[in-house]
Amino acid sequence: MTIILPLLAFAFVSLLVTAGAMALTPGYAAVIRRRLGEVSGKPVRSGSENVDKVVDTLKRIGNAVPKSPSEMSKLQLRLVHAGFRRQDAIVVFLGIRAGCALAVFAVMAAPFLFRATIPMALGGAGFGYLLPGIVLARMAKRRQHRIRLATPDALDLLVVSVEAGLGLSSSLQVAAERLRGPLGEEMRLALQEQSLGLQTTEALRNMLTRADTPALRAFVRSIVQGESLGVSTGEIMRNLARDMRKRRRAAAEERAQKAPVKVLFPLVFLIFPAMFVVLLGPAIFQFIEGLSGTR
Image 1 (cartoon, helix red, strand yellow):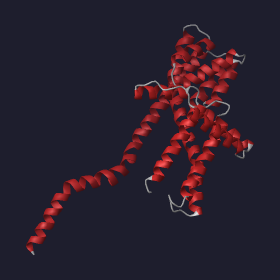
Image 2 (image 1 turned 60 degrees about the vertical axis):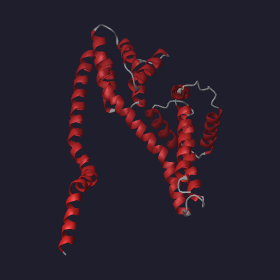
Image 3 (image 1 turned 60 degrees about the horizontal axis):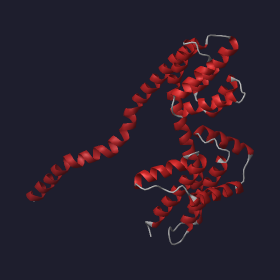
Image 4 (image 1 turned 135 degrees about the horizontal axis):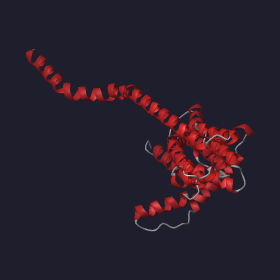
């Protein structure tokens, strides 16, 4: 019975993650089907009725969950920072959070699986309720880190394009075509908003709302100020790219200096004991045998 609990938890969480990813990310179901076909060597059918049923169930649970306007706005912004921009993303996430809480409570409260008291089951349900938010925050942080690393390269492309005689909108289009990753996606979305009638500065402000990083914030503010004051955009972006590279180098040096401190814990408590057992173990046994032979 002890192995049933981890298997049930793993299966349920895997199903929730797969269903949530298919519901939140456009085209994710086609990617999963293609990868399964590559692994199995057989074409996988496009029908995903079971996953669709799970997604519909998550949406119903999310619609039934009590909501507050302030929490909904914060959660919507966090989902956008993580890269989920669909309209029903927040409902699916609420369903995943409530489903995880109910699943953990049901598993821990089952008497034949896990002998836990009601307070322990409620504590597990609280952890299951908080776990999707923690995962979402890590996804948003990882995505913002990728955007921060790609910003200097994007500025270089913009500087080269502007100095070649292109305007700011054309330079953004060139950079969006060349860049890959979340920053390229945000630039392409800003260009789509601009094609729908928004001004360049408004599209850049919306991009900053979706991907709020210090580097991108400095870039958008510099562009907006340069457009309003009539300053050369190429000179502004060149200085900004140089400053961002210096900051990135300083951050890398800071992480390198922190590395010995972070390695100290596994080195002392995991590596050194194993080394002592291998190196000193035979000597200790010989010493004990020598003492027992002298008696």
